View 1: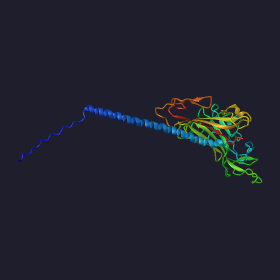
View 2 (view 1 turned 90 degrees about the vertical axis):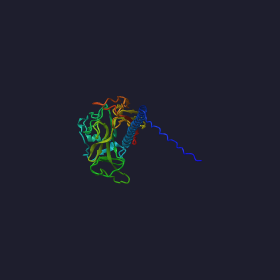
View 3 (view 1 turned 30 degrees about the horizontal axis):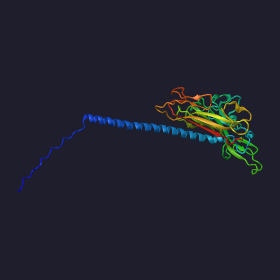
View 4 (view 1 turned 180 degrees about the vertical axis):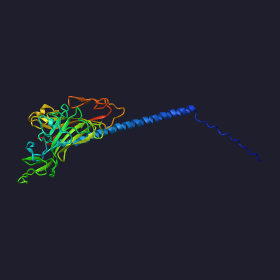
Length: 348
């Protein structure tokens, strides 16, 4: 017996329900909080990267400039074979050193020429204290700061280093050189050795280029008139003391000398470049202490430097000020202090 087939009636599909307005608003709020958190993390990471990069650049610049100055300072008092700087003479007489800016040596008291000042072999290491000033008539530097690069930084020292270059050089006209032997020595610039020993095998001689460098801080840089820089006047061909920029961002340089008064070559104390102890007969400069204040190459938004920087000089400290006219240390820049004590190699 066959039963008729029964068909099950298909149920209509369930109605589709969308998001209600309240659910949509809650989802948007949650999404905004997540997006805000992501942006906050990104901004913080970016800010931390900029700070880390700025500090790393400052540290790298500090290492660079100290590594540049240290070999030059260590060679102070080196004049080749000759052991006695007082025996070095100017032969022939017309050896001339000139400035690439204004020569103010006429104002020096007692009167002297810039050549004699630049080639003063009896003062292989010398400083100009900030209390004296760059252009002081008796304690300053007779060759003015470079035009177009501002003026020398207020409250900053200058360092003068004089010596023979570390490696012997070939005779060359137009270059200020020193020719030394065991018994005599002379500075010349005509490319002709001033003396030749009768027996060079027993009395050898050497010729070196003369180095006379002046390190100072300028209120401006070659690339930015509002950025201070460490500059150097160095002796080049033709007997010209040429002004060169070493590093922008150096705001202040302080120099102190470690001295020995009893001829034992040990540092007894550190003094400023204008200290009266440096004029005592028999006092020997054994070491040089450098202190530099360096700032980042650009301002940092939202940053204010509230530190007071204690300098080695007891006469003053440095406190950043609000950016504007007359402010040499603007507070919207990050800073780093670098210091190094350098022993002179040729102390004896």
